[in-house]
Amino acid sequence: MAVTRTFSIIKPDATRRNLTGAVTKMLEDAGLRVVASKRIQMTREQAEGFYAVHKERPFFGELVEFMISGPVVVQVLEGEDAVKRNRDVMGATNPADADEGTIRKTYAESIEANSVHGSDSDENAKIEIDFFFNEDELVG
Ligand SMILES: Nc1ncnc2c1ncn2[C@@H]1O[C@H](COP(=O)(O)OP(=O)(O)OP(=O)(O)O)[C@@H](O)[C@H]1O
Image 1 (cartoon, protein in one colour):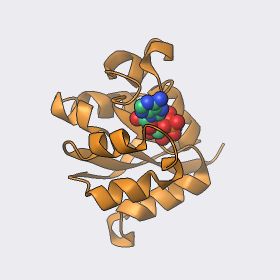
Image 2 (image 1 turned 90 degrees about the vertical axis):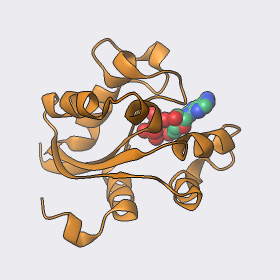
Image 3 (image 1 turned 45 degrees about the horizontal axis):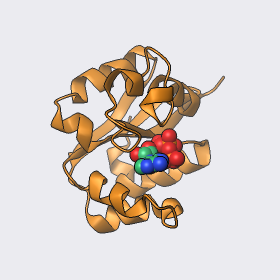
Image 4 (image 1 turned 60 degrees about the horizontal axis):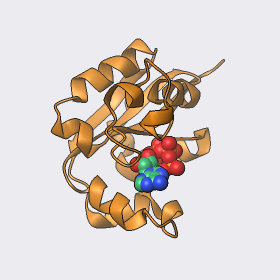
């Protein structure tokens, strides 16, 4: 298994409850290293662009409002098979379906306010990393 990178967002419901450290600890305990991290207030344009794949979904407007409702922490994570490792520790999108010990089971408030985002493929990880980080922020 190769060491790869993925992209993570600690969402506004988690930053609002001061869970940045607790969520990051769960990521690190799962074998992921934080190689870049910054706390930002997403603009509406950024949120709409980031979630463009969902723009026809009924929850798109609400999702964008939620993602700009407070600061988020965007992170680049590195580890063995990072995309899968991260999605395993995140748990299912809906916290009601998430396994015990996952971030969403532990902290998520709802299917929308579900505390974290994680890329779903190596290809999307690269696109999402490049959406929020410059080359010089990724020294590792
Ligand atoms: N039915 C829904 N109602 C409200 N919000 C939703 C719903 N389904 C998904 N979302 C929101 O949209 C995000 C993206 O949905 P997607 O189906 O890609 O889930 P995911 O891949 O588990 O999550 P993410 O892409 O954030 O890692 C979810 O994380 C959640 O915040």
